[in-house]
Image (cartoon, rainbow, N blue to C red; front, side):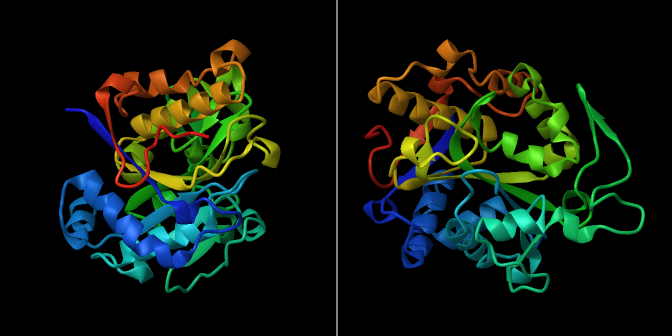
Length: 303
């Protein structure tokens, strides 16, 4: 069965600045129904999160960050299900990075938002577990937000080029869940991205993947480079993180071609970690095995 990736685009998401939050409830409901095949949004969300759980939405605040309006809209959509807003936390590595990216910090809700470092104290270092977890070629301490404060995870990444890995997407987003990602950037971050994500602490909790594609960046990342961003005006939703990242790569590659730029492989930075993730059973990176569904504007209209 093909992995399904929903690409939801809307003219109202393609402007400068943050999107109109009033559009998001309808767009999220349309997207989740397209993803699950359900006709009622409540049933669609329940299918993904069938019981009350503590949900952690991992955003990316480095360089070009995940839109706070999109992340908050996603949290509100999830909160309408069985879990409720008090069980949801938007998180990343540090309070400082979240604040700099435009997030409002809160430890009490209704939807909470804080960094791993906010949990520092006791037997942990800066909010990470003291135990080293080994997975493939990595040895890392995972965030206590993952290990102690959540039952289910959502990766809420942003679609952007990466100068080593080719793409910084939903899989690489979990480099922000370990204490030592600086050690794992050799060889285009491969197989380290896959090794972080295949650990049961991530793989067994990951229920949904989301990617902010309001203004993706097709070169110069991961720092924010507005000269190489364009108003694609959308977001991606899936349960297969490898498939979503593969579609994201295709969007970036098509934009690079349209701009007269070389493909990522020609710059010696194809996203090799996607094949490693497939080999570890995390999903598929084969485009012919991915069903791309567009409830709104056509995903292939790149310019």
